[in-house]
Image (cartoon, rainbow, N blue to C red; front, side, top):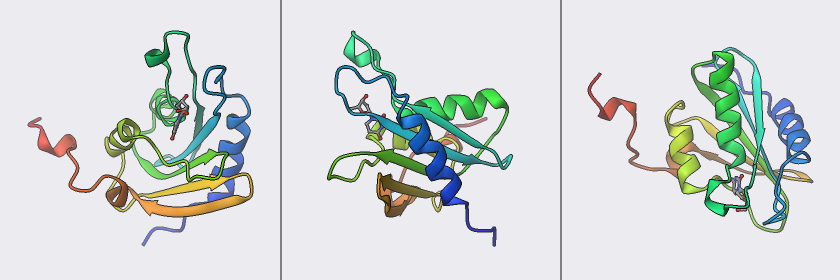
Length: 136
Ligand code: THU
């Protein structure tokens, strides 16, 4: 059994980067933090665009930072957002996480007051399609 991820560190990283999100259109700022297989935490925020569909989610930014640093796998995810609803990853980001995570990888949802909910990747994206579906 691997040790429980340090969710306090993920919360600190996600809440810090959320404040730097570029979200002038939705005014909905999101931060995401990943614990990677190298033991480091990688964070990203949403970056919107005047051409709306070009905007990117916080999770996509965090994954790009992880891959750019040379890490290979996601061990845990924390998403930080405000408002009364749980800010869970969108469908596309569930698939982005799927590429680098395991079915049991925790995806934790947080708000300003702290952790609100805990899921696994498999709970959010059941019976998913992934790298093993393709011949290599
Ligand atoms: N957003 C994220 O960055 N991550 C999520 O998990 C949910 C939604 C962003 C996309 C867009 O910039 C804004 O939140 C409103 O949808």
